[in-house]
Image 1 (cartoon, one colour):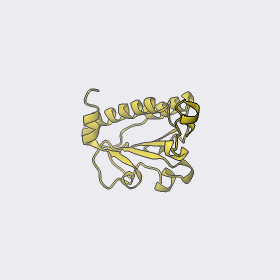
Image 2: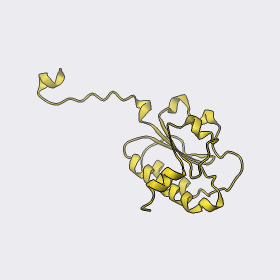
Image 3: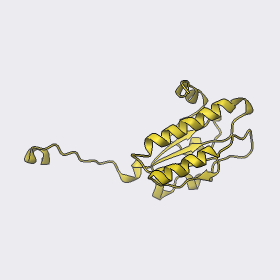
Image 4: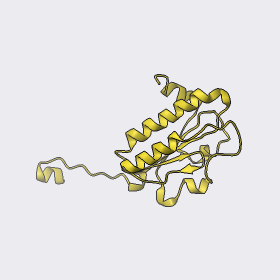
Length: 144
């Protein structure tokens, strides 16, 4: 009605603020023969962070490290630093923080898990909205 009254296009954004938040989780556990795929997974996450940081508040979880939810160039730099310092681990206990901390009620939003090794028992499969495992990562990063 406002568009008709003012003769100017008016768009109402109805997306809830909590749906505009994105958490990216990168597993650091992968077998030794998946080292190259792990490196491509790190590059994929860096690219996603770079592209999404201008539009959305982001949170990065790499192994047991959590950047917290934030936005802006300083937060992007902190997330890229966290990503640059991560190392692949061949085995061990789960490298995710406790599941309760992954989805704080105050930080709900979209969760993307990047798992460089196909592992259906990973706890991220229970909390993530989208999961990219080895076959999808290989396809997406073929040009890298």
